[in-house]
Image (cartoon, rainbow over all chains, first blue to last red):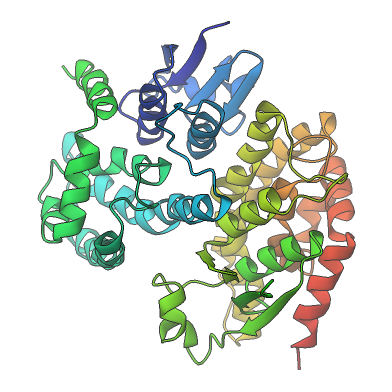
Length: 217
Length: 217
């Protein structure tokens, strides 16, 4: 069996989502770093892997697949953890879990990404944070978290009673936001806070964090 | 068996995606219109179905599921068309098809939605089109279509050799854009143009269009 190859960049949210999926499923893979600063994602040979120029790309034998949520779903469905499945066999339960993957994508991530740009990337690059954007997006994200708080009253995880991709897909954004004053919007909500603590301390996620921090100067 | 219920609004892109999925699979359902102008999606009882206030919602016996791409995936996987499957049994082939669902969501739809707002909704509501936005988004959408054109050289449909959700998910935006001068960016690309013609004339899609047009004054 050929070793899987993951082309990505360690600090990139989408790459981190796939790293976490691979570690959760204890899959061997070779990590091939793509240098975003050198714009290697806009050049060959990467363009042959993904003409949309987005990281990451997974190569699994003859399969080349892009889009991090697709790769995540593929790993969860195609490499089940026997006895510790992270997908539901019942299609209705899996339907509910899957809806929360799209909720992250459409409701949570757009706000989280704008906030991370303002409070993490801009300061890191010597740029000023736009406080109006932060205030607006923080208020919007708080509304989303109100729905999560209600959901997590009756369900240990977002997708149901077990950890699924619906939880994992949030980890990269949570990792960045938890290191900023925006941590308080999670801490203020007891069920959200307990959920964050549970998923951020998973061994697979710890391995991703170690990989990301290795690259820091 | 309880009849499925679809809560939505006929002209709404996300609702149209699910209507097409239901018709493709020849499933019986009751359509329950939600009046967006009366903001019924922000009130009870709809809020109990989807706290994120987004259309549509599908009720299938005891399952209540939101997010149109989730509902679409659920229908395609849970109600296969025996002998005329629109999903691949091979997980790698399905992985590739699934990536193009996310491509629509992340690459195609954001540009298409902005264009539809400018060239369809604004004029309909007596507002001026912002020509700078149209020029910018048209150029961005054209780049995406260049990738589609290349993909469709070697593959009849986006997801592979058969019609899948990866194609269907584009239909609502295509329907609106094809009625505007932006039709030319599709017509200019022979493979994209042939693909549009093939998917826009599917009987299931014709049924959606009839439903949408029924509501016009």
